[in-house]
Image 1: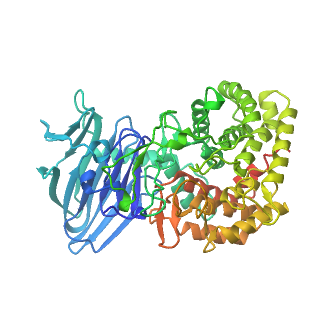
Image 2 (image 1 turned 90 degrees about the vertical axis):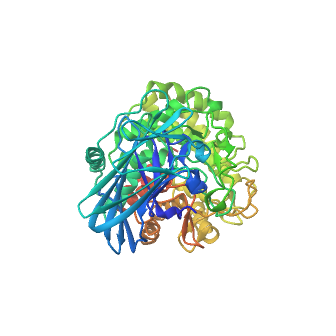
Image 3 (image 1 turned 120 degrees about the vertical axis):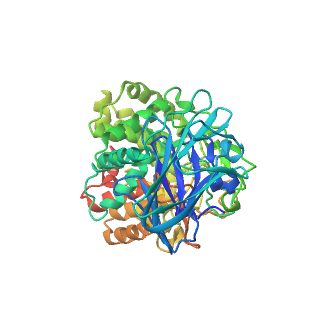
Length: 600
């Protein structure tokens, strides 16, 4: 059985990523891109679906993990009765595709065993394994090849490649796994120790630009590195997570593929990057989504592939039993075909924040803006599937209408007017019309709260975004009433905010899921806007305690069982963490900046 989600750590090269368990097993790796087919898929099945284990032959007394400071280089140290040794795992951010594992003796002598099972096509395909002239192990199936190099004597055993070795204090044993096409010769060998030095230098130089963020500087830096690790460097796209189908409830069916780029993450991500001084990354993210949505506005999707791909058909993989028997395992995402009005507000607001920061609009942005606004002038009146991608039919979601308001409001803002050299009167009038309708049809006077959708009595955590985007000020009685209602109905253990009430929620799926961590970070931001600083800091510190031992967060948390749920690590959770830390440590943080962007 795979490890608990929180027992994994990530290593990556800004093109793909691997999950390394605290037991020394790499149970998930997709090559050459985040959304490529996995060659190690034990995470969602059995060891026979592919993994690479390096572990002491003797059961360890203790296991400690850490990332080397300021890097994505992972150390897992095993303490045994005979000594201690560490496995150093990393993926060099270079032109190739390599995964390096170096076992370093720290004290005494430790015996190790390695067990390597390459299984292409998400664990379905057993490759043809052979030994090359230089002793490397080649695994080939169809168009793909893996090359494993090591000075350790390796042998075949029951469709696995295994070996035993020992390390003494001060001794190191290295393994390098490389990916390439099966046509042509294998890639040249890399020096694992030189690669370690270059990789550490790359990450330390990049993360060393992170400014002080009060008492949370190191925590923010770790989240920032994680965000970088989830960035597809060739295009600037940022995936939601490195995995697919880690469940929102153990044994449940809410198992989705998050290895794509969501537009709904755009503005908070832009603000986090710019506030920390990473303007090149912010610009690359903005340029990515402007390229992705280019074309007809009615074909704009909620998510895209890392290269901007639109065709993301959802399939199930019946040969994988799912994480802890949570099936089905899905690849692709049918929500890419949904209509979500809110994404237009994200496009507008994310671009607006870059204009406000002095990044002028691109030619593509200038041509795209009027097309989107003209389309949205009619489309905002339609029902949609909403931010949570419900599969129970379209509704008039309040959050979607609010984000449509954001589109027109930012267009009418003085910054937007100057950037595009056009009057904003028409868009200001459109924004006022939407706000009037939402306040009339989306606010329930009996509940004294905004509601999930028109004519509904249900609450929704996305309503916490109303003051954060500037739709209404934080001191508006309707905003304060909504905050109280969410605290009463959706807040669990004074820490975890549920997205909505999944019981009888008509979202088209069986009930049950964990608490979506981003929603709890939104609550922290609301407390800041309400000047409830003690409440904000208290909640934020509790949420920080939910990070795993190496500072990573999943999509959700299960309060009942005290464990992580959902895909891992989750970019949106880490973006929320960064922005909360900035809001609490700065006189004017991202929450105040975004809320102050309103023009009407």
